[in-house]
Length: 455
Image (cartoon, rainbow, N blue to C red; front, top):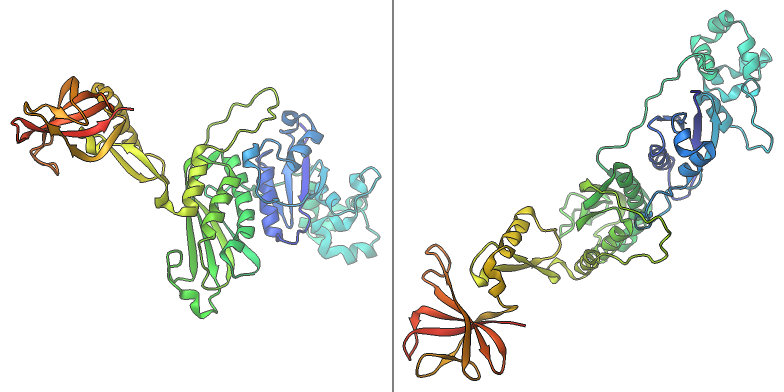
């Protein structure tokens, strides 16, 4: 299999420095081949093993320039980089040499016709080579090897051999970082927290690419910003600033996600409630928690109807806007007492394995079918007739029961002994009532209470 190399150099972009653009394109290139290296301000890719997989060179270049495998929900929230300049060759040095030439409508130059200044190893010797009349690779290669080695050094000969494929090329291959932790220097100082979103979008776009390459979803992110230390209030302390010159914002989601638009909306809601004590110079985004993502099944036919956002996305946006304590969810507890079977708490994190186990255990209880739909906030005492029968806007007819529930001595209500019944009221339908066996009523027997209603 003949080697096939692609040289890539990002075009300058006003809002992106060269290092950031190279990193972004290196990550995109790693989708196609593991053999990606940085040479000065360019990237080289060895793609001979990927040509057949992608259906040829044209299809491979299309896949490199356009990330068509990205799902719509994971589309970047900001452009990663502008289209780069590309060149190809049978060796990396040939591709890099052609990358330096202006684009011409004519067929690309053969190797022997490449200008000698496009060979990096020949750069220190260009004046001498020009006096010798050596202007192209072919004329340089035609010189006696011994004389070239004595006059220009063995490094030039080695580079020439690598360029013609007579010596293997060795490069330090780039790899994807194990943890996403990237920084960004802002083009200008930012005084308003919502304005940080512009720079954060670029970091989120890189995060989305990293997650897809790693086939992982983000559960928690941390955005940090560095305050201008020259300002006297850079050591300000509040909920988002600890006095060390940095501000921090934690974001969490209930399910692992590659949807950068959802993360952007959460970040925008949180930044709207942040006050910056000093201008910001740098941003840092770190994925503090990720987990593997399962591949989604796609339809063979195109689907014109885009599905809506998941419910937990909407709840997380509401919680980010109103505060984590404003959105609550109910969780079942592994407890036999009706007052303690469920608990309301903030709806930000996903249920843990222990809570899920408690829910499964409670739902598996055979007696759960007798529990009412609604539970009173506290048991309501019922009137009784002369015979001790309970009344609630009329006499009650007992249909099922008793179901005995007792509190142990170590519980918060020791000595509680209740017998629960399902009763029918001519006015209110089915009720859940109980008789307190250790609390006698005036008519004798236990006192009666209303504890729940059936829908």
